[in-house]
Length: 172
Image (cartoon, rainbow, N blue to C red; front, side, top):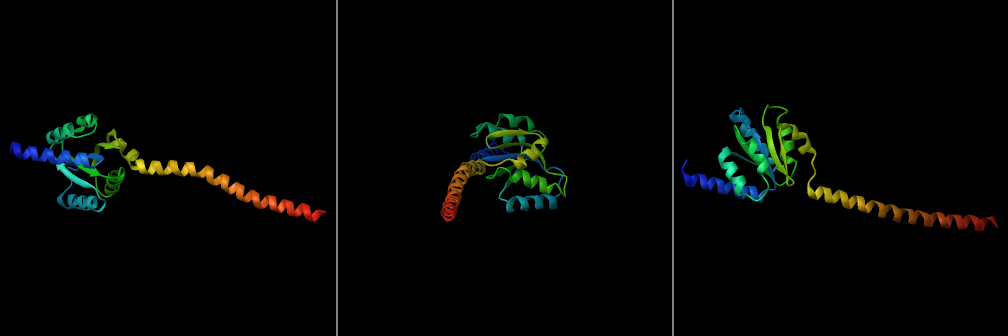
């Protein structure tokens, strides 16, 4: 491969790293052509971009990209493929679902919500992680709940007070 070609590949990877907030580094070696095609189709259906690349080119792209990717350098050994996604847990769910019928892909590391997760044992954590928008929604819901309770209590109290006054007036 010529130096110009390598530079183009690195530039393409840097562009993808800067445009996708969530990056999963996986190993899909050992999958046959049919299984690899099925994985690629599943990735496409779920909005995940799958790229197979050389470790040295990916490391250079990680060094040039915006983000704190230093913790991911140690996993750049053996065969590497990268999953790019706009949703934080979609690639983790995809990996988990695909492995129900296949032995790969394995998770090497991930950069999700500006944090690094290294190792296969982090897959279940990544499946359950919530995005920033989901967390903001949860906070808004929690903040609305006490206000709704107060309004509901005031409305029910109005009916209770009216019933109490009516009962007292009927007694005399």
